[in-house]
Length: 273
Image (tube, rainbow, N blue to C red; front, top):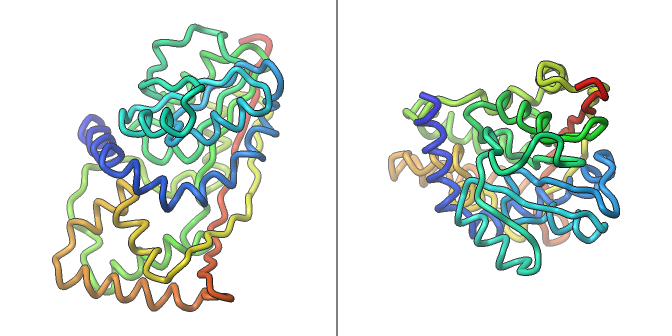
């Protein structure tokens, strides 16, 4: 089961790398400055960006003077990151098994929305803890629940009303499990971290056209996009139109502005670890 889900996610991101970069990345990169601030990333920090995607957090850490490395399991994402930032270091790697990184070799580690796409989030957090130096910080971001992160609510409601939300997909962890701050803190504590905290980040997704919301999910995501791509053609057309109509309600001065709050969870590796 876990391998099926991991393969599904891998195939999804191999196909979606460029289209994700053109749509979701303008939203997800908004969390980067605050994440690096709370992780204490600065000059000479050895920083590991796990599930780095197009490389935005790696690049910002490098701009701050850190020695940054980006790791992603998708070769297409790593290629995209290298094209964006040819002078920086990116490599293919597994968040759940950071075999190329020794114990205590990293000063800080971050994962920007990557945990949502892992078969075994707990394994990834244990690996983050292992590679950190004592007193090093690790953090990850996730979306708030759909009723707050409204882009998800719009698309998922359209699927429920006009399509089939129960089409078979490989089973993975619940997508919104870590939208609960207590679940984030629990995961960090069970992975050995101290001083665990969670902070809400108020993000807005600015789209140029109401059709862009559907296109972003259809082309630029693995799980939700996978569900959309499996819908019957007639249902899919109705879903697309429902998403467009709902997105129109968020039009403002020539843009579509959709609230998409996230939360950032982080913890510290103790001196005794």
